Length: 44
Image (cartoon, rainbow, N blue to C red):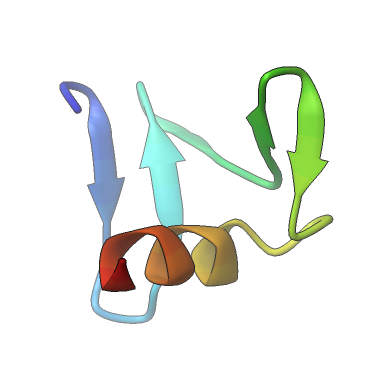
């Protein structure tokens, strides 16, 4: 997705700001662990 980056440590940023949580259809996805949420999505 444009504007979203993941560094080697797994830190996620969107438009220059750190992503702290991921939501799907308005619901929290993996709480406050954005890195785990993205790793899980990428595995499927």
